[in-house]
Length: 122
Image (tube, rainbow, N blue to C red; front, side, top):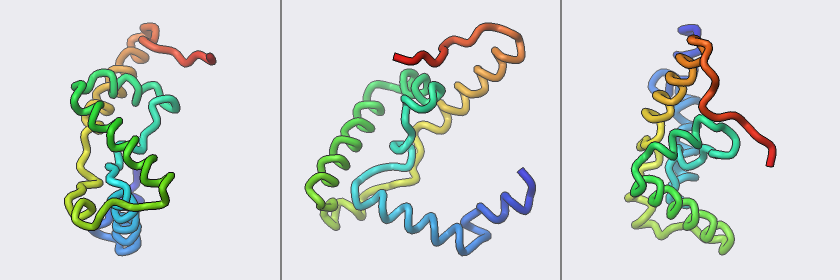
């Protein structure tokens, strides 16, 4: 990416990006979600593979957060204020593993090996 685009998207350098990040943070806190919870394993098989490699406790916590958010959304409610303050929406748990999976996939493609997983239509 060009340095101009990186500086434009960096919340530390651009007030509009910081404002957007704050708005996203508030929306995620209302439901008790993290930003990594929004990734869909059915959309990207790299995400599915990264979730399979994570420890079971982390995946269970993710599923619990998603269930709680769907329940709150169906009830048209938000988390209580004291729980909203405890949330950490941009604390990442998936990015490191996702980067490793993408790196391995790129390496396999560079070597000409067959992919470990392929998209199939059910």
